[in-house]
Amino acid sequence: MPGFSSTGDQEPLLTAKRQLANESDSEEGETLFERRTTFVPRDANEDMQTRLTYEEAVEAAGFGWFHWLLLLVCGWANASDAVEIVCVSFLLPTARCDLQLSSSDMGLLTASIFLGMMVGGYVWGYLADQRGRRSVLVVSLSVNGLFGGLSSVAPWFWLFLLLRFISGVGVGGSIPVVFSYFAEFMPRLKRGRMISALATFWMAGNILAAGLAWLVIPRTWMHFSIGRLNFQSWRLFVVLCSVPSVTSAIIFKLFMPESPKFLMEVGRETEAIHVFRHMFQLNTRGKGASWPEFSLHVNAKQRAYENNTPRPCGQLGALLQKAAMPVRRMFAANLKSRSTVLLIIFYCISFGYYGLWMWFPELFSRLEAGSSPCTNTSAPAQQPNRSCYPVKTVVYEEGFLIAAANLPGNIFTILAMDYIGGKLLLSLSLLVSSLSVFLIYLVQTKSQSLLLSCLFSGVSVMAWNALDVVATELYPTQLRSSALGFFTGAGRVAAIMGNVVFGNMLDSACAVPILLVSAMLLTGGLTAFFLPRTKQMELT
Image (cartoon, rainbow, N blue to C red):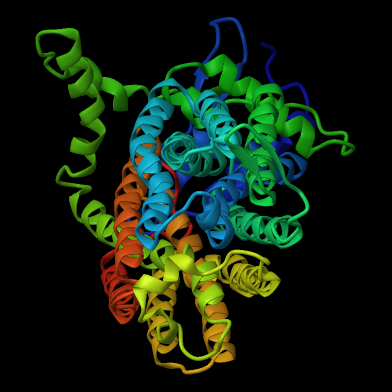
């Protein structure tokens, strides 16, 4: 490759050098560029060529069109996961009649997708750290959309339950991997705000699912019968909810590159430079800038543990030991405290958020007579006999309002993340969420319940956004997807327990699950104070 031939060619690298050099570490007394950048000869008879670290290469590639397009693509994938998860909650008020579901059955149904996510989270995350982010996203999104769509034609509850579980396996992979993938394209100083912006697409998915439910499910004329299958409007809603995942998988397969950070870590320097070149070309389109030639610091030493680890006899034992290695590293001495704290937080927020959120449509369906959420649930024997038709449109209107209440919280997160920091924002939002859930139990009118539910929606989404940023930045590249997959899997265990508790106690002791949600969120908020500071830190 030719060396630098003009000042214009060097400008992006000089800009990256100046920006990173100004961010010196006062304790070490030297700049990041001085610590990380070296100049090595390509050949004895050729000019010297700049060798860049990952962070310097990201800065040299610039920030612009590529990153905004990446935000839309990854955001659509994030929204598709949200749609697939919450669609079950919106179909409960009508599907329970067609599938003859008790409250316990409904709890099991809402828990099934989280069980799948628990299984898929760690497996897909591990594969993403070993095989690459992009390919795992394509497969997991395809599994999500395909089996989610197939569930729409399941005539029996057990088959519907199984297909939703398999769909959940796909969701469990795409959620943690998409955040790792996205973060590894971002410049350090913009990473927190951009990850917060990506997290807002979860709100878009909630609003899309609520809007589709509002438009489609009450249209009871949309039905026909084929043998044992009674295809009601809620089944069409399930089909429509699978479309975002399928389209997202197609986009990643056809148009998106692999993460350059992952490529550098596995020694694929040429491919990583090609990705940086593509980023540079899109970001500088119309500006007349020339691509600066450079090489990369390819650091493969973090994979040495794979080669130095003693192998047990047999392929199965070797595979299990290799799969368990990321968890062992997460709870090693230098990462043990942060991993323990994050495990508690993921468990608490998942139990609280999903335990309550998935039951909002059913709770508001039971609130149509007015009064507090628990007043109308004292007679369990009568609940299964409640009529599903005509469909109460107001239930979906309220679900849409609660989903839209995410918007203020998302906007605040984007604006405040880089100033407040993820740690403080996470803790405060969990504490306020706990208070709002406690007040939901105390209020006595439907309008008050709706208002506090919207408050919970707006504040809890800030906690999720902050957690996405913090968890992404706390682990090195070789552990990032595995760690996020592990924690989301642990969170799904909590979500399963939350939904099972709600399903079994909603009719007999409604106060218990609501107050338990409040206590779990309070615990998570207090525990978050023990996390390390991650504000504008470098990815390792």
